[in-house]
Amino acid sequence: MIALDVPLPTHVPVLVNQTIEGLNPQPGERFVDCTVGLGGHASAILERILPDGKLLGIDADPQAIELTNTKLAHYGEAIILVNDNFINIEDICKQHDFHPVDGILFDLGVCSLQLDTAQRGFSFHLEAPLDMRFNTNQGLTAADLVNTLCEEELARILRKFGEERHNRKIAQRIVQNRPIHTTLKLARVVKQVLGSKHARIHPATRTFMALRIAVNGELENLETALGQTINLLRPGGRLAVISYHSLEDRIVKQFMRRESSTEMPTLKLISRKVTRPTSLETKSNPRSRSAKLRIAERLS
Image 1 (spheres, rainbow, N blue to C red):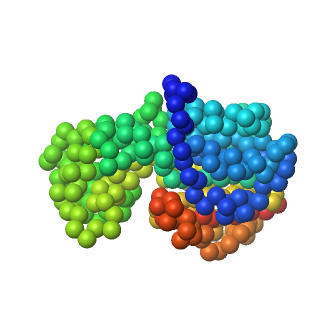
Image 2: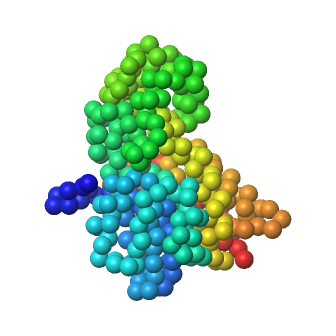
């Protein structure tokens, strides 16, 4: 339970103006935010669809749902919040009689709430248990993977989900230094292999990303959820996806291109070029620097 008498965490939504422009929400419409987080994009959408519009917000993180329920309480019945994984988007919408919809948004980044809360174990800058689960009530932790998988399987995860070139050396060093139960110990182990001289990013960045993706099944869930959006969007409704690394973006790009180029296409690309943050946004919000926005429109 979150103490509600303390200041709520802040989160700066990425590409918010470009996303709203692309989704083009209008009064009375219905939208689904599949990664509602702390409600940054959701509140921007709600301001455009009131007074009669509604938004269904989904998040796998129960802490985010609780905080956002407080933060957006003033919208009353205009917002419905559901603690679930977006892999279940079609069932969730049917359970709430929330279809067809005018727009669906996925913001695939890790929320500031998760990165800045030490005990969640997402950050290699903060000492914490090696967890990395979006929903701390479900599934294996990053520590479970690090301490139980064989060297070959660890290397495969680092290569596939982190695109880490030194995956074998890092996996070998991890196995040699077991047990590893904290974020900083894992970061130190990776740094022993890669060093940090002239590094543009922290040497543990790709390792942490790979483990997080594996723990939460992020890529598989994204592929499944994207397929379900076709059945939920009304003709003219729009799908917007903000991704943060090449693996996510590749899945989104391939899905949109496939659905827009079949003999009977279901989607139309709003723009073939990906939308990126401006230099002003990346300067004020460094976490936005790798963001890519793609938007498609549902055909009849």
